[in-house]
Length: 562
Image 1 (cartoon, one colour):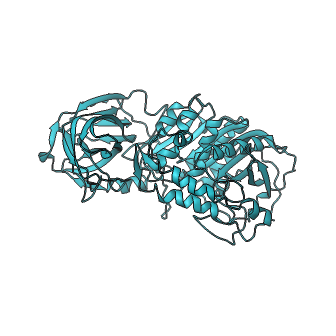
Image 2 (cartoon, rainbow, N blue to C red):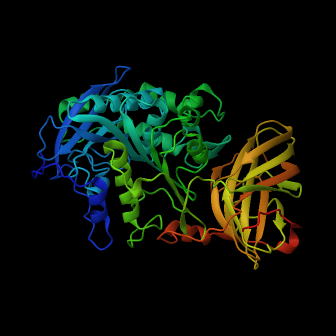
Image 3 (cartoon, rainbow, N blue to C red):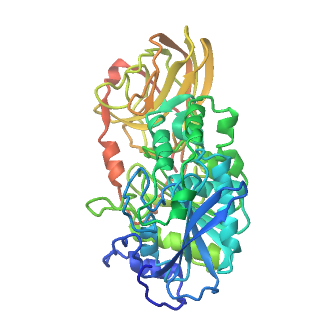
């Protein structure tokens, strides 16, 4: 058993302690080594899901707390909490329990503040039986069962929050879709919204669409730690036939198949009133922002919070190797808000930090508060684009030496600042002689010297030969176009750094095209503490050089800022 110190249940809130622990004037403690937390009494238990799968759980109770004292529960349901670290970070001699969210426990002081923290292994991972099914009914059912089990324990107040990032952020959203008894809040950082949209974008594969599923099948096969008892190994023994089935079914690039429909949380969570604290990076390279804002704007109720900004696949409190905040906001701000959000919805404590709404970061690195995103004052402006043609050869990229091939339209130099806030849409008709052509839409910010920076992207598999018409949604962004800059739109056949295109080798004709751009109409002048993130600085350095005199120029319709 780990070492302990006896602590009475503190009377201050989790948010108060989190503020002290995360203050930049203090040294933030490094995460404790797995199995050595002094602020916890750790036990292992097994519970049965509704489908009969036996799930393994690690329960961390505040050290020294009586066994029958009731506390709210923070729960992570995850493929990443194996005692050996799993395939991603194997350590066969690892000491349980997993330290996956020790940073959360350390920064918020959750255990000292009287929260119980529980980690449940997803089916097929860690010490749990069954098999993973890539966000399908088995995993969704496991989340539902885990929440209801945690809410029903004699040491629980009956109020449970799901917390996670990436895949275990996805399981949090499974909770909003299933709405189990006892689920009082969800903190989901950089999650998956749909199993399909993680691997594909409208029929076109992402670069990770093959490797990532294989890694998760390997994760199922990875044994527990040598420190684990026999029952952990026996219950978690792999069920290999399901792995091949998973891989085969994931090759279907049709979003409307039964397999993918069962893994789409956007319609399933629509109207959910479970309070959600969501983060999504506009510049995510892993769990991309497509579908994020469909999910966000489909939620019901008014208790939700979100951070949308120019960051990558990070936790809101993460820092880089130089100690810089990965979001550009002070890490203490995020820790404080997460803690206050849990205090509010699990214990009923009110604070300004728990107020609902959106904190959003623009392309200049500035953070501000909005009541919704896209904001209510956004107006969509439509501009007809030039026609043309492109080669479906799979060679074009969005930036760099291979960028720029296709049908271009650029605006005249903007006479005033224009502020895009939302998701552009490319309305386009293309003609091809062969089926399964590739279509890509890219929006750029073009400086007076011709340096172009990518603003938004989207793709579509053109399944049929002949003429095809699409309303192609592009990624959401919050981007400021400076006076004198131009807006550029490229219709082409590839963004080879982002997607895995299967080129047909044909020429595709752009018959008609129009871009819908969402612009703010009111100036924003009040900003929060923070600045540019490391990811934003990296993105702004990725460019192409455009000869604006050699492409079609048109006057774009933009909204005036007042």
